[in-house]
Structures are given as C-alpha cells and as structure tokens.
Length: 389
Ligand code: UD1
Ligand code: UDP
Image 1 (cartoon, rainbow, N blue to C red):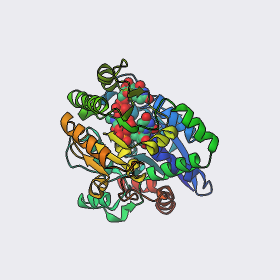
Image 2: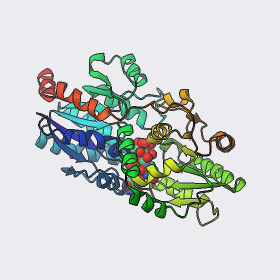
Image 3: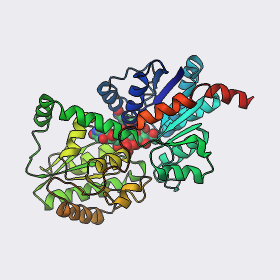
Image 4: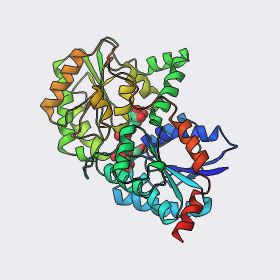
C-alpha cells in the first residue's frame, strides 16, 4: 500500500490532477490517496473539484484578492509543514509549474518526503518566460524523485539537465485523460447537450466562434492591452465573427479587459466569467479558432483538432508548433490580427486544423503514472530520510 498525498491549488492543476486522483481511488488495495488543496485559487478551483467529485482532506485556503508570489509561496510552505508532519506520505504528487507546485516541492524536500512531479520537463530555458512558471518547473524538477514527463521532448530536457533517466517516465499528458472523459460525458448525454446549447444560446451558430483567454504575468500591461485591441479589430472588421472571452479574475487582467472591450462597445465580443470546465470543453469543440496564452489550451485545442494562436514569444510546448496546430505570434496587435484573419480564412467550416491530434497523449497517462507509483512509490520518503541521515 502506497500512501500518496496530492497537493495542488489552481484550476489547471486540478483539471490535470483529477484523472490521477480518480485512478488512485479506483485502486484502494494499492493506494491510500489523500488530497491537500492549497486554495491558491478559490472559485476556479471549486468548479473543478465539484465536476470531478474530489473532496479534499485538507484545504490551506491561502487565496487573497490581488495576492503576489510571496503571499502564495510563503503561506503554502508554512501550511504544508503541519500537513506533511501529520500525514507522513510515502510520496507527494505535485503538478506543473505554479507557486503552489514550487512551494509544495520545497516543503517536501525540507521534510525529506518523496516527490512525484506530474507534467515534468517542460522548458523554454528563458528565465522569465513564462514568469514565474519556468523557474517553478526547474526548482521542482531539481528536488523531485520521480518525473512524469508528458512527451519525449520533456524527457530529453530532463536528461539534458543531468536527471537520472531511471527516474523519468514518459506518460502522456493527463489533460488528454480529462478532456476525453468530459467529451465522452457530453457525447453520451442528449439532455446535457441541450442544456449546453441553452446555456450558450446567446452565441450565433452561423458565426465563426473565437475563444480568447489571457492571464500570463509577462503579458500584464502593454501585452494585454495590445491583445484587446487586436480582438476589437478582428471583431469590428469581420461581422461573421463572434468572440467569447472568459475573463480571468486576476485584477491585472479584469481591469484592462473590461476597460477596453466591455460596456457593450462590441456587440460580437462577449466578456464572461470563467466558464466551468465541462461547458468550456463544449465551447472549444464549437470554436473555429482559439487565441490564448494559456498552457492547457495549447494542449487541449490541438487534441480536438483546433487551430491556436499563441500570444506569447516562446512556448514550453513546441510539439504543436512543429505539427502546425499552433502559431506563435507574440502580442503585437498587427501580427495577432493578421494571423487571426489568416487562420479563419484557411480553416475548414468546422475549424478542423487537419493537423495531428495526438501530440500530447492517448488518454492513459493516469494509468501509467499509477503503475509507476505502485512500483516505486513505497518507502520513497523513508529512503529520502535515510540518505539525508
Ligand atoms: C496562477 C499560476 C499560473 C497559472 C494560472 C492558471 C502562479 C504564480 N501562477 O496564476 O501559473 O497559469 O494560475 O489560471 O502560480 N482569483 C480569484 N479567484 C480565483 C482565482 C484567482 O479571484 O478562483 C484572483 C485573485 O485576486 C488572485 C488573483 O486572481 O489573487 C491571482 O491568482 P494567482 O493564482 O496568484 O495567479 P494567476 O494569475 O491565477
Ligand atoms: N478553462 C476553463 N474555463 C475557462 C478557461 C479555461 O475550464 O473559462 C480551462 C482550460 O480548458 C484548461 C485550463 O482551464 O484546461 C487552463 O487554465 P489556465 O489557462 O488558467 O492556466 P494554464 O493552463 O495557462 O496554466
């Protein structure tokens, strides 16, 4: 029996850890699965916990409005000290690249507890791009005992940093597991489909739907303002287009987006609150184009055959750029507008990119992670304590 504590705190971590937690819970003979949420996000985290029916054993409840990196990291580090001492897990699972991830990894290291890093090895090798995610990933990679790399590119990055190949496992990205399970849920439920159609009846099915999201720290200020101007220009010059923009609740995002695009100035731009994950998957499927700086969307949209315009200068997810599903344009207004128009013109009426869809996984990542944990998880913390003396 392996005792596993999964620690996460934001919406994307929850979506990507849900398949792993569900897999551990499906095997109670092999795993004792406990969950600690840091509450780095509040409402956006609650949406995902409800959807996947995850009931946390611990909630550090750290979120405050307008928090900074010191607030989150400090509170998570301090809060986990007590939880780790109480639970004494064989291994803690963390995910990806957030402040929660890095602080939790450090807390485990200080407590000599085994660490499994899900979505390990993504890199841009540019310290401040994305910020602070690149550094959160590298720090977590430096202290993790097991590295669950989603792709062979991620594995190669870790090997290049001198990480022991015997501790790296290529599993696929768990986002594909989550996406497939939600897509199946929608496809198998006619009443749910009608409910979703009703929920989004304000969208005109004859228009080309663009979904836009933006929240990266390096885009705060001028970057977000440029993107808003680009969206306004696309919406104004093409009456056939409709833009749905779920606005991230971060005050650095909400303020400029509502100032530049709100107040009903653009009838074909809809600013909405963050959409729950299940309806959001439905919307991605309905869309012709995604314009985003989100990490998760760079994986989901290609998996559903959609084109993505990435409003960043570099990405740690090069696979879809190489395959042609993703185009990187930065945040220059003119470039975003030109690339957006080009992709709308050249995509099929269903928005199908025609590019390879299975770049990030096959929906079995959680099973592979559980298999590794069965083999290597037991006694990992004990081994760490022994080697630390
Ligand atoms: C965080 C992660 C980022 C991830 C993103 C996903 C860090 C440093 N950043 O950025 O890697 O891509 O989450 O969305 O860990 N807020 C709410 N309700 C919520 C969530 C956020 O009101 O449910 C507001 C609060 O004012 C909060 C602010 O957003 O203080 C910022 O949240 P924070 O988690 O610090 O940063 P994100 O920009 O969400
Ligand atoms: N997402 C969602 N509702 C929204 C916007 C995004 O459920 O209104 C999902 C999206 O499908 C993806 C995840 O949230 O799975 C990405 O989160 P975010 O962009 O906040 O973070 P990142 O992936 O950039 O870390």
